[in-house]
Length: 429
Image (tube, rainbow, N blue to C red):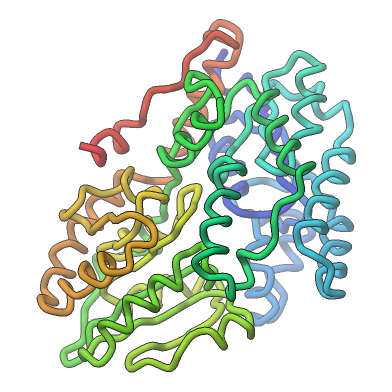
Protein backbone atom coordinates (compact mmCIF):
# COMPACT_ATOMS: atom_id res chain seq x y z
CA UNK A 1 0.00 0.00 0.00
CA UNK A 2 1.19 3.50 -0.84
CA UNK A 3 1.31 5.83 2.20
CA UNK A 4 -1.08 8.16 0.39
CA UNK A 5 -3.64 5.35 0.28
CA UNK A 6 -3.61 5.03 4.07
CA UNK A 7 -6.21 6.83 6.16
CA UNK A 8 -5.10 6.24 9.73
CA UNK A 9 -7.28 7.49 12.57
CA UNK A 10 -5.46 8.69 15.69
CA UNK A 11 -7.57 8.84 18.86
CA UNK A 12 -6.22 10.52 22.00
CA UNK A 13 -8.50 12.28 24.52
CA UNK A 14 -5.71 14.51 25.88
CA UNK A 15 -2.52 15.97 24.42
CA UNK A 16 0.96 14.52 25.09
CA UNK A 17 2.80 14.02 21.77
CA UNK A 18 -0.26 12.84 19.77
CA UNK A 19 -0.43 16.12 17.77
CA UNK A 20 3.16 15.50 16.63
CA UNK A 21 2.23 12.05 15.38
CA UNK A 22 -0.85 13.43 13.61
CA UNK A 23 1.22 16.14 11.92
CA UNK A 24 3.84 13.65 10.75
CA UNK A 25 1.29 11.21 9.33
CA UNK A 26 -0.44 14.11 7.59
CA UNK A 27 2.91 15.14 6.10
CA UNK A 28 3.18 11.62 4.66
CA UNK A 29 -0.40 11.72 3.36
CA UNK A 30 -1.38 8.91 5.73
CA UNK A 31 -3.71 10.70 8.19
CA UNK A 32 -7.45 10.22 7.96
CA UNK A 33 -8.59 11.84 11.23
CA UNK A 34 -7.06 13.07 14.46
CA UNK A 35 -9.68 12.68 17.18
CA UNK A 36 -9.04 14.36 20.51
CA UNK A 37 -10.74 16.18 23.36
CA UNK A 38 -9.78 19.80 22.82
CA UNK A 39 -7.49 21.27 20.15
CA UNK A 40 -6.92 24.47 18.18
CA UNK A 41 -5.82 24.00 14.54
CA UNK A 42 -3.68 26.57 12.76
CA UNK A 43 -6.25 27.09 10.01
CA UNK A 44 -10.02 27.46 10.10
CA UNK A 45 -12.18 29.62 12.38
CA UNK A 46 -10.59 28.59 15.69
CA UNK A 47 -7.10 29.18 14.29
CA UNK A 48 -8.07 32.68 13.20
CA UNK A 49 -9.60 33.49 16.62
CA UNK A 50 -6.53 32.10 18.38
CA UNK A 51 -4.22 34.46 16.49
CA UNK A 52 -6.26 37.45 17.74
CA UNK A 53 -6.10 36.49 21.42
CA UNK A 54 -3.83 38.33 23.87
CA UNK A 55 -0.41 36.73 24.42
CA UNK A 56 -1.31 35.64 27.97
CA UNK A 57 -4.35 33.70 26.75
CA UNK A 58 -2.40 32.19 23.86
CA UNK A 59 0.17 30.84 26.32
CA UNK A 60 -2.62 29.11 28.26
CA UNK A 61 -3.72 27.35 25.07
CA UNK A 62 -0.19 26.46 23.95
CA UNK A 63 -0.44 22.72 24.62
CA UNK A 64 -3.79 22.56 22.79
CA UNK A 65 -2.48 24.14 19.60
CA UNK A 66 -2.12 21.58 16.81
CA UNK A 67 0.36 22.57 14.14
CA UNK A 68 0.61 20.77 10.83
CA UNK A 69 -2.89 19.25 10.99
CA UNK A 70 -5.62 21.01 8.99
CA UNK A 71 -8.96 21.63 10.66
CA UNK A 72 -10.62 19.32 8.11
CA UNK A 73 -8.68 16.36 9.60
CA UNK A 74 -9.45 17.27 13.22
CA UNK A 75 -12.39 16.05 15.30
CA UNK A 76 -12.83 17.17 18.90
CA UNK A 77 -15.03 16.52 21.93
CA UNK A 78 -14.32 19.63 24.04
CA UNK A 79 -17.25 19.02 26.37
CA UNK A 80 -15.49 15.93 27.75
CA UNK A 81 -12.40 17.96 28.57
CA UNK A 82 -14.33 20.79 30.23
CA UNK A 83 -16.25 18.27 32.32
CA UNK A 84 -13.03 16.58 33.46
CA UNK A 85 -11.45 19.92 34.37
CA UNK A 86 -14.51 20.91 36.45
CA UNK A 87 -14.38 17.62 38.34
CA UNK A 88 -10.67 18.01 39.04
CA UNK A 89 -11.25 21.53 40.38
CA UNK A 90 -13.90 20.12 42.72
CA UNK A 91 -11.21 17.87 44.18
CA UNK A 92 -12.22 14.51 42.66
CA UNK A 93 -9.48 11.88 42.28
CA UNK A 94 -7.59 12.34 39.01
CA UNK A 95 -7.48 8.60 38.29
CA UNK A 96 -11.27 8.32 38.47
CA UNK A 97 -11.86 11.50 36.47
CA UNK A 98 -9.56 10.52 33.61
CA UNK A 99 -10.78 6.92 33.53
CA UNK A 100 -14.37 8.17 33.14
CA UNK A 101 -13.32 10.70 30.51
CA UNK A 102 -11.40 8.07 28.55
CA UNK A 103 -14.33 5.65 28.52
CA UNK A 104 -16.82 8.29 27.34
CA UNK A 105 -14.32 9.44 24.70
CA UNK A 106 -14.04 5.92 23.24
CA UNK A 107 -17.81 5.48 23.15
CA UNK A 108 -18.26 8.87 21.45
CA UNK A 109 -16.26 7.86 18.37
CA UNK A 110 -18.77 6.91 15.65
CA UNK A 111 -18.57 3.46 14.10
CA UNK A 112 -18.35 5.16 10.71
CA UNK A 113 -15.00 6.75 11.56
CA UNK A 114 -13.52 3.34 12.35
CA UNK A 115 -15.00 1.91 9.15
CA UNK A 116 -13.44 4.69 7.07
CA UNK A 117 -9.98 4.25 8.62
CA UNK A 118 -7.27 2.02 7.18
CA UNK A 119 -5.66 1.76 10.65
CA UNK A 120 -6.69 2.94 14.12
CA UNK A 121 -4.06 4.26 16.54
CA UNK A 122 -4.99 4.56 20.20
CA UNK A 123 -3.05 5.29 23.38
CA UNK A 124 -2.63 3.36 26.60
CA UNK A 125 -5.32 3.88 29.28
CA UNK A 126 -7.77 5.22 26.68
CA UNK A 127 -8.18 2.41 24.13
CA UNK A 128 -9.60 -0.78 25.63
CA UNK A 129 -13.02 -0.29 24.03
CA UNK A 130 -11.63 1.23 20.85
CA UNK A 131 -9.31 -1.75 20.37
CA UNK A 132 -12.23 -4.18 20.60
CA UNK A 133 -14.36 -2.11 18.21
CA UNK A 134 -11.53 -1.88 15.70
CA UNK A 135 -10.81 -5.60 15.88
CA UNK A 136 -14.51 -6.35 15.34
CA UNK A 137 -14.32 -4.45 12.03
CA UNK A 138 -11.24 -6.41 10.95
CA UNK A 139 -8.99 -3.34 10.99
CA UNK A 140 -5.45 -3.22 12.46
CA UNK A 141 -5.35 -1.54 15.86
CA UNK A 142 -2.03 0.00 16.93
CA UNK A 143 -1.49 0.84 20.60
CA UNK A 144 0.91 3.65 21.41
CA UNK A 145 2.37 2.66 24.79
CA UNK A 146 3.44 5.91 26.42
CA UNK A 147 4.90 4.33 29.58
CA UNK A 148 5.93 0.91 30.88
CA UNK A 149 3.52 -1.88 31.76
CA UNK A 150 1.09 -0.83 34.53
CA UNK A 151 1.87 -3.81 36.75
CA UNK A 152 5.58 -3.00 36.61
CA UNK A 153 4.70 0.56 37.55
CA UNK A 154 2.67 -0.65 40.53
CA UNK A 155 5.70 -2.64 41.74
CA UNK A 156 7.79 0.52 41.58
CA UNK A 157 5.16 2.45 43.52
CA UNK A 158 5.12 -0.28 46.19
CA UNK A 159 8.89 0.17 46.57
CA UNK A 160 8.51 3.95 46.74
CA UNK A 161 5.80 3.68 49.40
CA UNK A 162 8.32 1.88 51.59
CA UNK A 163 11.14 4.33 50.82
CA UNK A 164 9.17 7.59 50.90
CA UNK A 165 5.73 7.09 52.51
CA UNK A 166 5.43 10.83 53.13
CA UNK A 167 5.38 11.66 49.38
CA UNK A 168 1.75 11.95 48.23
CA UNK A 169 2.18 10.63 44.67
CA UNK A 170 3.05 7.09 45.86
CA UNK A 171 0.05 6.60 48.15
CA UNK A 172 -2.69 5.34 45.85
CA UNK A 173 -2.96 1.81 44.46
CA UNK A 174 -4.33 1.59 40.91
CA UNK A 175 -7.78 0.02 40.68
CA UNK A 176 -7.83 -3.58 39.50
CA UNK A 177 -10.37 -2.73 36.80
CA UNK A 178 -8.07 -0.13 35.27
CA UNK A 179 -5.15 -2.57 35.25
CA UNK A 180 -7.36 -5.12 33.50
CA UNK A 181 -8.43 -2.52 30.92
CA UNK A 182 -4.81 -1.79 30.01
CA UNK A 183 -4.03 -5.48 29.69
CA UNK A 184 -7.04 -5.77 27.38
CA UNK A 185 -5.44 -3.09 25.19
CA UNK A 186 -2.25 -5.16 24.97
CA UNK A 187 -4.16 -8.33 24.12
CA UNK A 188 -6.33 -6.74 21.42
CA UNK A 189 -3.61 -4.68 19.73
CA UNK A 190 -2.23 -5.81 16.40
CA UNK A 191 0.93 -3.88 17.18
CA UNK A 192 2.23 -2.05 20.26
CA UNK A 193 4.58 0.88 19.70
CA UNK A 194 6.79 1.70 22.69
CA UNK A 195 9.18 4.63 22.80
CA UNK A 196 12.01 2.99 24.73
CA UNK A 197 13.71 -0.34 25.38
CA UNK A 198 12.78 0.05 29.05
CA UNK A 199 9.05 0.20 28.22
CA UNK A 200 9.38 -2.73 25.82
CA UNK A 201 11.11 -4.85 28.45
CA UNK A 202 8.36 -4.24 31.03
CA UNK A 203 5.77 -5.40 28.48
CA UNK A 204 7.75 -8.56 27.69
CA UNK A 205 8.17 -9.31 31.41
CA UNK A 206 4.38 -9.10 31.71
CA UNK A 207 3.89 -11.70 28.97
CA UNK A 208 3.45 -9.59 25.82
CA UNK A 209 5.11 -11.22 22.79
CA UNK A 210 8.34 -9.42 21.78
CA UNK A 211 7.38 -9.82 18.12
CA UNK A 212 4.28 -7.72 18.74
CA UNK A 213 6.25 -4.71 20.02
CA UNK A 214 8.09 -2.06 18.01
CA UNK A 215 10.34 0.64 19.45
CA UNK A 216 9.98 4.11 17.97
CA UNK A 217 11.80 6.80 20.00
CA UNK A 218 10.41 10.32 20.01
CA UNK A 219 11.99 13.27 18.28
CA UNK A 220 13.06 16.76 19.23
CA UNK A 221 12.96 20.13 17.50
CA UNK A 222 16.72 20.75 17.40
CA UNK A 223 16.14 24.26 16.05
CA UNK A 224 13.98 25.31 18.98
CA UNK A 225 16.14 23.52 21.56
CA UNK A 226 19.38 24.85 20.16
CA UNK A 227 22.47 23.89 22.12
CA UNK A 228 24.68 25.45 19.46
CA UNK A 229 23.64 28.88 20.76
CA UNK A 230 24.53 28.17 24.41
CA UNK A 231 27.18 30.39 25.97
CA UNK A 232 27.89 30.12 29.71
CA UNK A 233 28.49 33.55 31.18
CA UNK A 234 31.77 34.06 33.05
CA UNK A 235 31.47 33.75 36.81
CA UNK A 236 28.09 32.02 36.82
CA UNK A 237 27.98 28.97 39.12
CA UNK A 238 27.64 25.52 37.57
CA UNK A 239 23.93 24.85 37.39
CA UNK A 240 22.12 21.48 37.50
CA UNK A 241 18.57 21.31 36.16
CA UNK A 242 15.62 18.97 36.76
CA UNK A 243 12.44 19.33 34.66
CA UNK A 244 9.34 17.26 35.33
CA UNK A 245 6.69 16.53 37.93
CA UNK A 246 8.35 17.20 41.26
CA UNK A 247 7.46 13.90 42.90
CA UNK A 248 8.85 10.61 44.14
CA UNK A 249 8.44 8.62 40.91
CA UNK A 250 10.63 11.13 39.11
CA UNK A 251 13.35 10.50 41.71
CA UNK A 252 13.21 13.90 43.41
CA UNK A 253 13.80 12.45 46.93
CA UNK A 254 16.99 10.80 45.64
CA UNK A 255 18.00 14.08 44.00
CA UNK A 256 17.46 16.01 47.24
CA UNK A 257 19.50 13.42 49.16
CA UNK A 258 22.32 13.78 46.63
CA UNK A 259 22.17 17.55 46.87
CA UNK A 260 22.55 17.41 50.67
CA UNK A 261 26.03 16.01 50.03
CA UNK A 262 26.85 18.66 47.40
CA UNK A 263 25.20 21.82 48.71
CA UNK A 264 27.63 24.56 49.58
CA UNK A 265 30.09 23.61 46.85
CA UNK A 266 29.29 26.70 44.78
CA UNK A 267 26.87 24.99 42.36
CA UNK A 268 23.10 25.35 41.97
CA UNK A 269 20.20 22.95 41.46
CA UNK A 270 17.00 24.18 39.81
CA UNK A 271 13.75 22.21 40.10
CA UNK A 272 11.32 23.07 37.29
CA UNK A 273 7.86 21.55 37.11
CA UNK A 274 4.47 21.26 38.82
CA UNK A 275 4.78 20.95 42.59
CA UNK A 276 2.08 20.68 45.24
CA UNK A 277 2.10 22.53 48.51
CA UNK A 278 2.54 19.24 50.38
CA UNK A 279 5.59 18.33 48.28
CA UNK A 280 7.13 21.77 48.61
CA UNK A 281 7.00 21.34 52.40
CA UNK A 282 9.07 18.14 52.08
CA UNK A 283 11.97 19.87 50.30
CA UNK A 284 14.47 21.41 52.71
CA UNK A 285 16.08 24.80 52.23
CA UNK A 286 19.57 23.89 51.02
CA UNK A 287 22.30 26.18 49.64
CA UNK A 288 22.00 26.58 45.88
CA UNK A 289 18.60 24.86 45.65
CA UNK A 290 15.94 26.81 43.76
CA UNK A 291 12.34 25.67 43.27
CA UNK A 292 11.20 27.30 40.01
CA UNK A 293 7.83 25.54 39.76
CA UNK A 294 5.63 25.05 36.70
CA UNK A 295 6.61 26.71 33.42
CA UNK A 296 4.89 26.65 30.00
CA UNK A 297 6.64 24.31 27.58
CA UNK A 298 7.50 27.20 25.26
CA UNK A 299 9.72 28.66 28.01
CA UNK A 300 11.81 25.50 28.47
CA UNK A 301 14.44 26.30 25.80
CA UNK A 302 15.35 29.42 27.76
CA UNK A 303 15.67 27.46 31.01
CA UNK A 304 17.89 24.84 29.37
CA UNK A 305 20.08 27.63 27.99
CA UNK A 306 20.65 28.96 31.53
CA UNK A 307 21.84 25.60 32.91
CA UNK A 308 24.74 23.19 32.40
CA UNK A 309 23.80 19.62 33.38
CA UNK A 310 20.40 17.91 33.22
CA UNK A 311 19.60 15.52 36.08
CA UNK A 312 16.62 13.17 35.83
CA UNK A 313 16.81 10.25 38.33
CA UNK A 314 13.39 8.75 37.55
CA UNK A 315 12.20 5.35 38.79
CA UNK A 316 9.80 4.69 35.91
CA UNK A 317 9.23 6.29 32.52
CA UNK A 318 8.02 5.58 29.03
CA UNK A 319 10.72 7.76 27.51
CA UNK A 320 11.10 11.20 29.19
CA UNK A 321 11.15 13.59 26.24
CA UNK A 322 12.96 16.17 28.38
CA UNK A 323 16.09 14.01 28.04
CA UNK A 324 16.17 14.66 24.28
CA UNK A 325 15.35 18.33 24.79
CA UNK A 326 18.27 18.62 27.22
CA UNK A 327 20.68 16.90 24.82
CA UNK A 328 19.59 19.12 21.95
CA UNK A 329 20.13 22.12 24.24
CA UNK A 330 23.75 21.10 24.75
CA UNK A 331 23.39 19.67 28.28
CA UNK A 332 24.80 16.28 29.28
CA UNK A 333 22.29 14.10 31.09
CA UNK A 334 22.48 12.14 34.32
CA UNK A 335 19.58 9.70 34.35
CA UNK A 336 18.59 6.12 35.09
CA UNK A 337 18.05 2.76 33.42
CA UNK A 338 14.28 3.25 33.92
CA UNK A 339 14.13 5.92 31.19
CA UNK A 340 15.14 6.19 27.53
CA UNK A 341 18.66 7.25 28.57
CA UNK A 342 20.22 3.87 27.60
CA UNK A 343 18.67 4.30 24.13
CA UNK A 344 19.96 7.85 23.74
CA UNK A 345 23.48 8.03 25.11
CA UNK A 346 26.67 6.06 25.67
CA UNK A 347 27.77 5.95 29.30
CA UNK A 348 30.51 8.48 29.95
CA UNK A 349 30.21 10.15 26.52
CA UNK A 350 27.03 12.26 26.55
CA UNK A 351 26.28 11.73 30.22
CA UNK A 352 25.89 9.08 32.90
CA UNK A 353 23.36 6.32 33.54
CA UNK A 354 22.72 4.74 36.94
CA UNK A 355 20.15 2.56 38.66
CA UNK A 356 17.06 4.27 40.12
CA UNK A 357 17.45 5.14 43.78
CA UNK A 358 21.26 5.11 43.77
CA UNK A 359 21.67 8.27 45.83
CA UNK A 360 25.43 7.98 46.38
CA UNK A 361 26.02 7.17 42.73
CA UNK A 362 23.93 10.18 41.72
CA UNK A 363 25.89 12.47 44.04
CA UNK A 364 29.15 11.06 42.68
CA UNK A 365 28.19 11.72 39.03
CA UNK A 366 27.08 15.26 39.85
CA UNK A 367 30.26 15.88 41.83
CA UNK A 368 32.37 15.08 38.77
CA UNK A 369 30.88 18.10 37.00
CA UNK A 370 31.50 20.33 40.03
CA UNK A 371 35.14 19.24 40.18
CA UNK A 372 35.61 19.66 36.42
CA UNK A 373 33.09 22.16 34.95
CA UNK A 374 34.62 21.73 31.47
CA UNK A 375 33.25 18.17 31.47
CA UNK A 376 29.75 19.59 31.04
CA UNK A 377 30.76 21.46 27.88
CA UNK A 378 32.52 18.43 26.36
CA UNK A 379 29.69 16.01 27.10
CA UNK A 380 27.09 18.60 26.12
CA UNK A 381 28.61 19.03 22.67
CA UNK A 382 28.53 15.26 22.17
CA UNK A 383 24.91 15.20 23.39
CA UNK A 384 23.88 17.87 20.92
CA UNK A 385 25.35 15.79 18.10
CA UNK A 386 23.49 12.70 19.30
CA UNK A 387 20.18 14.59 19.58
CA UNK A 388 20.32 15.48 15.90
CA UNK A 389 19.78 11.77 15.10
CA UNK A 390 16.36 11.91 16.81
CA UNK A 391 14.18 14.20 14.72
CA UNK A 392 10.38 14.29 14.59
CA UNK A 393 10.66 13.72 10.85
CA UNK A 394 12.49 10.42 11.46
CA UNK A 395 9.86 9.51 14.06
CA UNK A 396 7.10 10.05 11.49
CA UNK A 397 8.93 8.07 8.81
CA UNK A 398 9.31 5.09 11.17
CA UNK A 399 5.59 5.28 12.04
CA UNK A 400 4.67 5.30 8.36
CA UNK A 401 6.81 2.22 7.71
CA UNK A 402 5.19 0.40 10.65
CA UNK A 403 1.70 1.14 9.32
CA UNK A 404 2.74 -0.03 5.85
CA UNK A 405 3.85 -3.37 7.34
CA UNK A 406 0.32 -3.79 8.71
CA UNK A 407 -1.27 -2.98 5.35
CA UNK A 408 -2.19 -5.55 2.68
CA UNK A 409 1.02 -6.93 1.20
CA UNK A 410 3.12 -5.61 4.06
CA UNK A 411 3.06 -8.70 6.26
CA UNK A 412 -0.18 -7.93 8.10
CA UNK A 413 -0.69 -9.73 11.38
CA UNK A 414 2.30 -11.98 10.65
CA UNK A 415 4.73 -9.05 10.47
CA UNK A 416 7.56 -8.90 13.02
CA UNK A 417 8.39 -5.63 14.71
CA UNK A 418 11.26 -6.39 17.08
CA UNK A 419 14.01 -4.57 15.17
CA UNK A 420 15.56 -1.53 16.90
CA UNK A 421 15.93 1.83 15.11
CA UNK A 422 19.50 2.53 13.99
CA UNK A 423 19.99 5.44 16.41
CA UNK A 424 18.94 3.27 19.35
CA UNK A 425 21.30 0.48 18.29
CA UNK A 426 24.21 2.93 18.12
CA UNK A 427 23.44 4.35 21.58
CA UNK A 428 23.35 0.87 23.08
CA UNK A 429 26.82 -0.07 21.85
